[in-house]
Length: 409
Ligand code: URA
Image 1 (cartoon, helix red, strand yellow):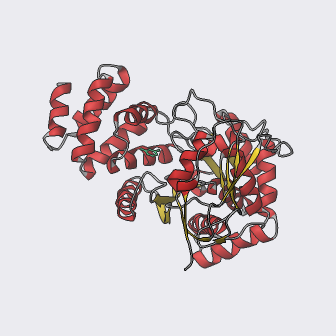
Image 2 (tube, helix red, strand yellow):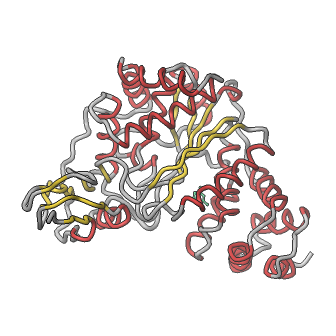
Image 3 (cartoon, helix red, strand yellow):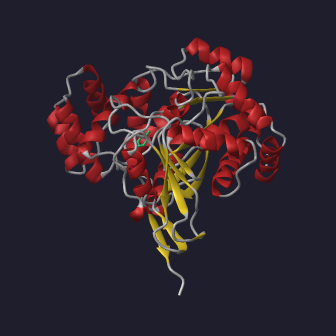
């Protein structure tokens, strides 16, 4: 089989056979297909898409490239995945809620690149928290306390690790079939059979429209069905940040506030929605019943208690969550109503303060970030604090363009 012919077939929108897909993807793993050939192949897919049967064969090859984990609890495991957004700390709240109801949670999360930190970056901002557990440690911890959140083990879909790194630098991330293959293969390999996906769309997410989010969800749903998995979806608008905190440790502190019942609003609502869907799937109960159970764990403190057990068991020190950076107020230049807080622009400013990175080699300053003191639709007076910036950096970003304030006539 000729590598170049396979690339040309995709370019000409001809359907690939299973053998051609397997040959090409395995060839990439063993080095016979080079990075430049894979880049051309990915770009052709980005432009011309893949058929459903091609997508299924890709997922199969991705899964075969590593190990599929099996746990004694696999049949009742329920996992969640967010397509990622600004201020998204939902996993930190939802995982202990679900575990506190006796449903085992084994979650493998990633680091963030670009504008936001990932869940693992957020957890790593807790001094001592161990993000690289071995399979034996994962099994022991879930047996003992019913919850683990860790980085993926080395053998989880190695083909995705390599292709994702290449997509990141070749402008080929935003392809719906490639995203569906990448997400679903990792989720299926992680050992659960039931998943709730939080599909973020809007300027602060990589899916810009609800329509794109729905297209991706539809394809992910088909892959799930093919692998006898159950899925549910929520759709959330990411044109403004989720919650008040943007930055890793600040987000952990905000998640704790939600678990302690100190925060209401959109963040709490999203956490309840995701957790309720997970509980409904896991326990096979109606959504309203699941929601009652979820809210009770927040009100009676059991979710927070599970959180502290989880973090301390995994080595984290919850008494060391101070923010040592200088706290710099950013004040409103005029009075009026806040019409919009732009997620993408805020995330860009938080990144300039050190809260996220472009490559895994760059260091994050875990304590840096932005804390919003106001939300959309709030009234603000000139000179009032809109946000606090936490950073050691001397050069500060301008936040003016992040807030749209409309003066009342
Ligand atoms: N997240 C993933 O895991 N894969 C993608 O392709 C895009 C986002």
